[in-house]
Amino acid sequence: MKVTVIPVTPFEQNCSLLVCEESAKAAVIDPGGDLDRIEAAIKQSGARLEKIFVTHAHVDHAGGVAELARRTSAPVEGPQRGDQYWIDVMEEHGRDFGFEFAEPFTPNRWLEDGENVRFGNITLEVLHCPGHTPGHVAFYYRAQRLAFVGDVLFRDSVGRTDFPGGDWDTLVRSITQKLWPLGDDVQFISGHGPVSTFGRERQTNPWVSDRELANPTNPD
Ligand SMILES: [Zn+2]
Image (tube, rainbow, N blue to C red; front, side):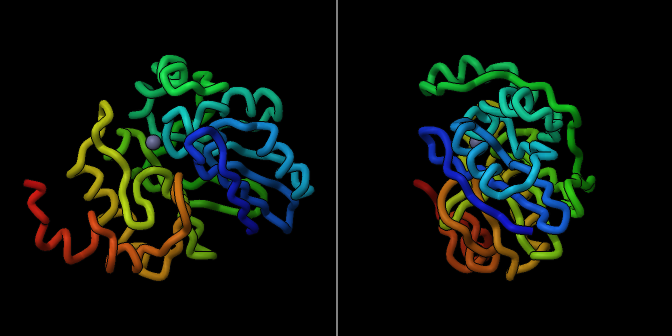
């Protein structure tokens, strides 16, 4: 599987284009906006878009989902149902942040922990990782030990938990009980910023390193 990261929206959100080279089928994770740029990347890959996957329904990740689905007829899979709230407020949220595209969408399939999603000859595992949003999911491609974690975890940071439905303890549980068990060597692509590995974050992440979680720094 070949992966191209396309930064989209004013928030430089990492939309990922996944291409199954055996079948020339593609999937896109989190087409938040800048659809012309995403469609150009799909065209350049020579693959046909088969699926749209969504980690969570924040506008920078999902504001372009409805339009891309209309343009390509690709079905939308994800997030988990807990994110219906964010779909309902997407237009308002988009306006607040000055987004060109911010259209609510209806997933063809809601996802649950432990399920799989497929395109071409590729299967990705679904991990429900609430905390940043209630219905946030991550996608894991075991064959390449590569995870797509949206806004759950970043290199040197973690997702915000101060939005409605966010919860710090829940986020930490998602990271330590869903992501860490995949293995220290697993690489992850976040919704924002550079690639990292879970092992690196367990060593040096100022919020969720093993050392920090064993002995939390009192913010006061
Ligand atoms: Zn988010």
